[in-house]
Length: 394
Ligand code: GDP
Ligand code: MN
Image (cartoon, rainbow, N blue to C red; front, side, top):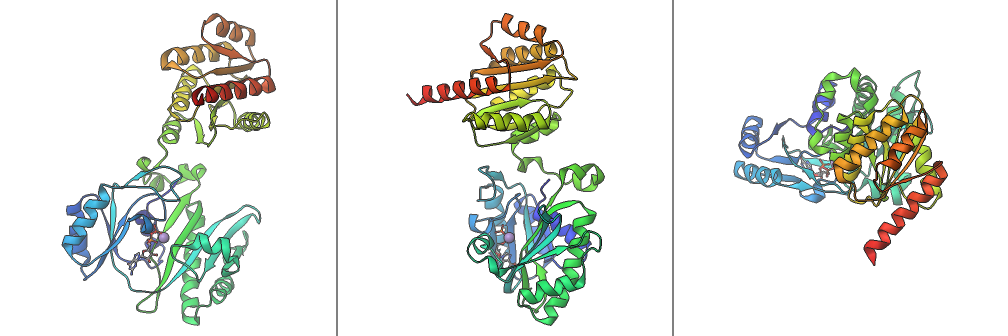
């Protein structure tokens, strides 16, 4: 689960990590009131969307008057922002953060993430912070300092010194960095985060370190332990199909290909995608309808799949271990009839009451292609998808 910058900064503040004073606003009027209550001569208006790269997309503006606060807030609240981090989506700006503008002497980079190779939390830092850190990582990786935190010992002060001196900071800033990294690590562990990024971490006009931007990501599997954080979820920022799936208890991830897969069980879903690829196809999604699925969920799953724009064929691969194949067939028939599926559907069923299930499909009169096993199913769906695609091109 992703958070807005203002939410992440509230958490930073709770943990004693210095952030500029700010208020969130949902209308231009609220933005002006926010600036008034903050006081000062200069503010920054920041579009709140679940993505970085806002600065370059016109979502971060420095302003000097209340009229400008209103004007920028008004513009941003009408915007949809799409950056290199939004994965093809345009995210609506439903709120803006109004913060006191900070003088920047230097922009640094600091992040923490779950390092799957080293099986620990790893901090990454760089003196070359700011908006182009991806460029630095690609062309000058030696400018990035990494520190692995031992899972048992936890974060140690000497690691902040390694990081700070590695980034070329002064003793004073290294001392401040030590406090910040220790607090970030506590936050990371307490809240079951999977990613935390401060870009930029700045040296401000008073020569102190401060988190000017804040991005955090929480492990969805830990959401039940954090009702306070779960309440911060903003579905308007999520892929609409993925959000609808999670409401129906379906595991859905949009992918780049054109063959939609509907499978019960995550392991079978992975195997299905592998076999589709082996046969020269590209999956349009990962969809696990759950081990003990039912007709209703199969129907919802069809709706989700058909909401995707690039689907040229659908492969249904259900193993009836806990569920009965005849009930799944009823679900498929109901879905295809009700939802109006206009792409080829290949179905491979196996397990309890498979004969009844197959008979229902063939008696339905619907143009469903049945398959005898997984490889047969993959071959047929790839052929059907290629045919559909070529049909459009000719
Ligand atoms: P991002 O583009 O989505 O990562 O948004 P950031 O919050 O990181 O802002 C982008 C850039 O805007 C920063 O790297 C700064 O250079 C600039 N910026 C943001 N807030 C301030 C501020 O308070 N004062 C100044 N001078 N620049 C700011
Ligand atoms: Mn940033």
